[in-house]
Image (cartoon, rainbow, N blue to C red):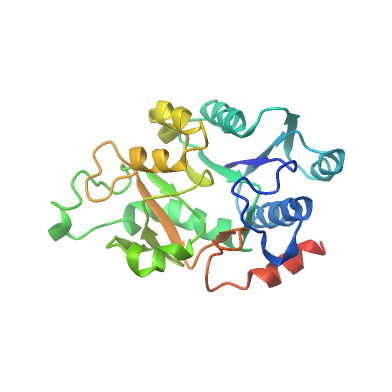
Length: 257
């Protein structure tokens, strides 16, 4: 897996949502990156860190790790396009993880994700009676996108939807239809939908991206998007924390490493 970690310590939060646990942006980046870095050691991987106007403190921080590192001056939209450019230069069957710098990961996140990828042809099956509703869905052939967090708004009464639920050998996975710009998929999926990904980069329009890419019950030219239950990462905004995980304990652990 090729992990592309997109980071900027200039802006605290694009949507001005408060950060949990009183973290400033630099410590938030450090904690989130460490959680990703150490979790990824469980699988074969490469990490590319794409910095955007990073301070000298953060440049020194990333230079201490075994990663491909660059620091430019892009802005949010262009940094997304730079990540896409990196991805489309990779082999088509390689899995790529676009990760923003404010996602904290569980220690076993990448092991569990790798297991689903290995088992997808057997794990992502639907009963024959579901054929009409799941038209064009083909395990092993239908593109999949993995979204590691589990957003709490999916459990609000007004937002609850009927979706497929699967399980791999060590995790349940629920179909979801909307994501941010932190997700995992194959390079060939990025190439197939590159015009959509590129257009979605303008204004970081993840709503447009989700509407255009994901199938619900008809998967013709669409991808199946899955989130783990419970989530394997959390978006570090106070109002979007993945439930049922002691994220503060993980934050404290990585803050001291």
